[in-house]
Structures are given as structure tokens and as C-alpha cells.
Image (cartoon, protein in one colour):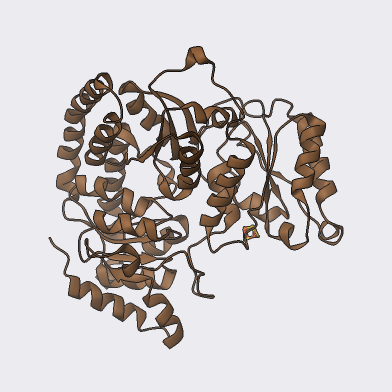
Length: 478
Ligand code: SF4
């Protein structure tokens, strides 16, 4: 059923009316009602500072760099440089899976921190950092490098981590990458992505070489897939069956060694535009490597993406790709036949980071569901330009949607499913609304690729049609 534009506009007005004049004016610019032909930034302004005291769902630049971009690179040691909190809270919480022997090829199961104390704030932490890198090299000699992820105090006390990186890198003959991702920089995780991309550009890109005998005309790199619950593995299965040769995947189950040779590929396939468009553009400018965006959520988008990718290559790849589509279509139809009748017409509200609020819409639509709200934590105007086209007219589009607005919108829209993060999960469940975590896949997944869609459909059905929702209200209050 079409969404009533006027009703949506009234709902947004109503939710904003709780604010005093000044914050209302601010938030009004960030929430709008979708019209496919409108400009995205006209509907929602973005990438601006959060209002103080409104419970933004956003994180910081450290989360964007260490948590998202660098964290999943398994053969380096990420040092959370600063006090204990940031490293501890981000330890093992993002489900970017990786293969490899822990402590030998894969350092992701550990938390490495310089654990700042007051004396480090007073006297500076450069010496401590140098000592930590030496100590870690001794304990883990097989590491392929170190990434120094700055937490808030580092930039404030005037430490020179670049100098430490240069010195330790020369002393130990290894790669040490200083990253200025202090949480006070920028307005969200987003600047952390950019800073991390730039550090890869400055310290990694072009430092390796792919053996000429190993090169093929079908070499590609996947960028912006963090292998949540095995997403990159499910995507690689499809891309490999198409006949392409994935020589690097960033950064889910990825390695710095792959990053070093990525400039040798013929095409970059970009899943998360927000977090890795910077480095993709750099590859294009410096090495002339074209990049294209794709979407591996749900069979409709997967099919479109396979054809879009195949069109870059010769007939051999195009034929192979059609065979892949042919092979999986009956399986996908079986999934749709099973779950669509159970999910048809259900309304979804989404609040996630910088990609999924638009990317996952097609997968819901494949199941007959309707996205009535798509909200981002840290998207930019170019993401909103892409979002308007994916959503139906009348859907509510929101930027940096805070907890009050989210809850109030849900009261009015009465969704059948809320798809968001851990901070939101239990609030909505207590409201009696089915919920799925759309960052961690609620410890399920993968959701990418053909294998992922089957799991996605099953999970949405489990959440929405769980008998537990019937028992939220005690019988004597019904
Ligand atoms: S804002 Fe600062 S203290 Fe907080 S998590 Fe980010 S880096 Fe750490």
C-alpha cells in the first residue's frame, strides 16, 4: 500500500513539536518525507554536529577508524592508544569475522591498549607507546605491522605519535601507522573512516607487488565489506562463481598484505560507499582503477549488481554471470515462496549507520515488506541522494535520529519491525515491537549474497512472527 505523504508530514511535525524553538529548528532540517525526485539533502541535512543532550545514536571518529576500517585487518596489531575505556568497550563487539591462527596470523581476538594513567597525561605518552610497540613485537613477532589508534587525549596533550611511528618502524623494520582518529574530531564515526582511509593511502597503498605470473584480467578487490557474520565470504562465493578473481577484500577478513597489492587490480567493487569512497577515489585518480558500487542484499539487488559488474568484463564473464543468476534464482524463489506470505505488507523502520538504511530496502521488498522510515547515524548528502531513489514516496528519512524521535515515530507509525542497533533493541522490545539488530545481525548472518538472503528472510520471520509478542501485555490488561 502506498504511504500517505500528508500523514507522514503531520507525524514528523508532531514529533518535532516537543522541542523548544531552537532545537526544533535544528532537528527539523534533519527529518523529512521522501519524494523520489527531490534532492536528498533538501529532505535531510547531514554530517553536522549533534545537538547536546538528545541521546544521539552516534559514535566517534575512533569508532570509525579502529572499530570499522582498521579493526578487521587481521594481520596487524591495532593499539588503542589512550585510557582503557575505548579499547575495552570496542573489544570483540563488532562481528567482523576473520580466519587465521589467533596471535600468529590473526590479532583480532585481543585488545591492545597503552592504558593511559594520569602520569601519561601529565608527561605525555610517546615513550609508553614506543615501549608498547617494542614489547608487542617481541610477544607477537609474526605481526605484519602496527596501527596506532588515537583516543581523545592524544591530540589534546600534544603527543607526537607520527614521530614514534617513524622511529619504531625504523628500529623494528616494520610498518607502524599513526592514526589521528581522536574522538573529538568530526561529528561522528564518519570522519574516522576518512582519516583511516587517508592513513592507508599514506602508509600502505602501493607498497606491495603482485607477481606478474599471478595477474589475470579478472582481478578485482572488494572494498567496504566488513564480513559481519561472514558477509564477505558469502559475497565472494558469488563473485568467484562469476569467474572473477578476488585478490583483496577490505577490510573484513582482510590483511595489510592484500592492501599493499590492491593497486594491481582491474576494478574495485565497492559495497560500503560511505566508509571507503575516499580510498576508492584515490585508486582511481592515482592508478586509473575504476570503481563501482554494488548491493548484495536480496535477490533483486544481487541480480542487478551481478549484471552491472559483469558488464565491465568480457562475454566469458557475462555468460558465467547469467549462469550464476540462473543457478540461484529457483533457490531464491523457494525462500520467497516460504517467507513472503508470512511477511507481506509488514512495515519496517530502520536506523543504522551510513549504508544499510538504503542498501537493505530491496531485500525487505523482496519479502513484500515496506520500509516506512530510513534513518542514518552519520550519512552525508551523497548518501541521501542515493536514498531518495530507493524509498517509496512518503517514507520518513531522518539524519542522526535520536532516541526520543525514534520512539515517538514508532508510537505513531506502529511498525511491525524495528531494525537498528543494540542501544535501541531493548527499548523497542519492551514496547512490544519486534526488533532485529542491523549492525550485528543479532549474532546471525551472513545477510549478503544468495546464502545471506535465506538467513535474512528466516531471521525477519522469527522476529516478527514470534509467539512471544502475544504475551507482552498481561491477560488481565488486554
Ligand atoms: S569519544 Fe574519545 S573517549 Fe569516547 S570512545 Fe571516542 S576516542 Fe574514546
